[in-house]
Image (cartoon, rainbow, N blue to C red; front, side, top):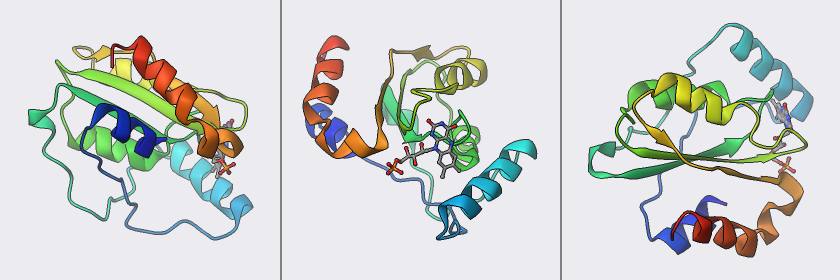
Length: 141
Ligand SMILES: Cc1cc2nc3c(=O)[nH]c(=O)nc-3n(C[C@H](O)[C@H](O)[C@H](O)COP(=O)(O)O)c2cc1C
């Protein structure tokens, strides 16, 4: 999805890479992620944070984990300043859609304009280019 957005918007792309890999097993990952959420953890990011000051609009996407952004995305959100910018959530999911991501962004960045997000089920993501483009058209791209 991020690549589809990048192609259409011609923006720069940054990948949040967790410093510690998650378990290979899906079930174990759900357990680790649940604990991180319960602990309100801020897992470390491996790569350097981008300088977001030069951007007007930032798309923030991830898989939905327990109805939310994975906590490592919260580490990212704490490490940058998105106030006075347009911020746009996008997610892959298995039923939760955007989950609470829009609310999370609004709560943390009260002076950002949070635009209409978009979600697609994980299994449909690879074929979602035209749906992503329609959504972006609606945002004015
Ligand atoms: C830790 C964890 C928690 C998840 N929690 C949710 C959830 O609350 N709601 C949901 O719709 N999907 C949930 N999922 C499914 C992921 O969103 C899904 O795996 C992801 O979007 C990628 O899709 P794919 O596995 O088909 O590639 C969870 C997956 C993991 C690993």
